[in-house]
Length: 302
Image (cartoon, rainbow, N blue to C red):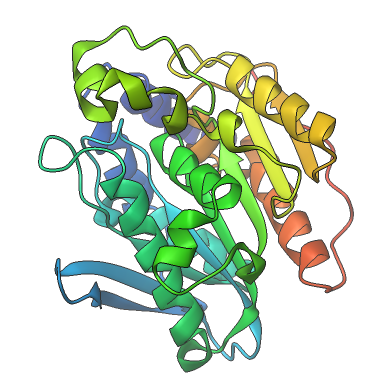
């Protein structure tokens, strides 16, 4: 791809991801531009018989005892689909990881804490089935963007969700959060108030209020240009974890927006940031595997 084509591609995707066209269009474009080479995808596997919830699994060719990354998409807990995030599953598989990309139930069909409970069920399934796909259940990670980052932060800070499905936070070698809402009281929007209500439990809905210093290692990344979920969410959670003596790493990008931080995971846009390089480095290190050269924070060019 020459310079002109590359600039056109970046501008096209940027237009799609900044709301000038339907949000899902940018994700669909990234899916189309992600070549299905070097991995296989098993689609629509039911991981919870009671609800019929399904997951996709992306497996690198020749995978053996590979780390497993369960990725949860964002969408304000009210929209989204695993089918829009093939570009993430494929990109993670190309790094040598088993990528599990599940669905979870959304508002208004359900309210908190159901979407976190669904996420716990997906993690339980990934743990129990890792070996079938060449993965190592002892190298299990959870990852999410936006609302999905919230879901995995709740799993990492409040062990009750994994315990309820017969699991444990000890299963998690690490948690990776991209632009997550971890400390977003007071609620101002009516749908969010309804989603997380009643008011007497608002405090318990915040990941920051469950920090006890015993969380699995966390890698929290956020763009300073994020006007959807403010970077203070990541700063506040990280500071609380550090104060409690828990393990946490942070990366902030001066020029990354809410949509771009996940878009640059795609193979098409990885050169625009080092979000994937940080992700890979973290997973390898926490899996006890040799990491790549430590990445240096990059920023999206003007």
